[in-house]
Length: 264
Ligand SMILES: Nc1ncnc2c1ncn2[C@@H]1O[C@H](COP(=O)(O)OP(=O)(O)OP(=O)(O)O)[C@@H](O)[C@H]1O
Ligand SMILES: [Mg+2]
Image 1 (cartoon, protein in one colour):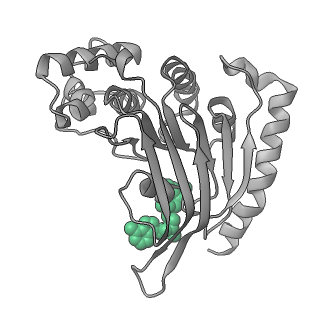
Image 2 (image 1 turned 180 degrees about the horizontal axis):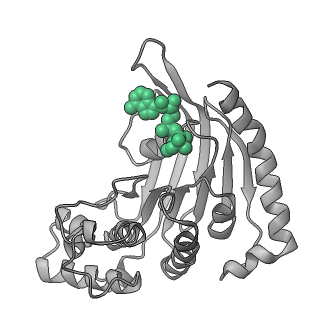
């Protein structure tokens, strides 16, 4: 198996999903009647105010959390391979070196050692980390650690990548570079991606569509088709069309962020 031969695609169907947490004294309604169809090979970005249920939705799609009601249906060309996550934080194992971090998912799948290291090396090269195979995460920068997490997700061979603010912890310049890298990797691979982000520009640069959510309980406020042709680069951000789209998404979110702030 190589990265090139695993390019199967998944589709995701979320139907009427609601989620209530009963953790503290009062129940928390995290999601309310969320329905979403994700086409195979598409890149969907989810934006919304903090605490509106974005991570919860992603975890429900990935089977890490149960919906209180509603259904999630993943149609996968290879259902032996679960969705690959890039988590909001703590995305790498500090006790594994870089190579073992990237090869981790393949090891879970019991891919032979030589083969999983070959695939992992290939992905390390593609994210610009060749030469760091034997380093440990604490010896690397935050941006490099995120590259490991992204390389690992791609290397699993999963056709469904679920990313929760994969670039959220990076400084502004590194984040811009990583956005370009992510666009490039995805355009080459065309896996089905659902990505949560706080960055409106990031969502418009990367996504085929942007799902804007309301304040908690999270509902879908608007489902926006991103009109920009691919391949895309940062140059896109300088166009009037991009400014207009950014303004539109910001208007959608502004009221929801206010609701969140007032509720505090
Ligand atoms: N395991 C849990 N137990 C109890 N409540 C939870 C749990 N996970 C999430 N919540 C609550 O559900 C709501 C939605 O949380 P979630 O993490 O999905 O938000 P989010 O949109 O990802 O926020 P952020 O943008 O800050 O990451 C929050 O009020 C949170 O406190
Ligand atoms: Mg979150």
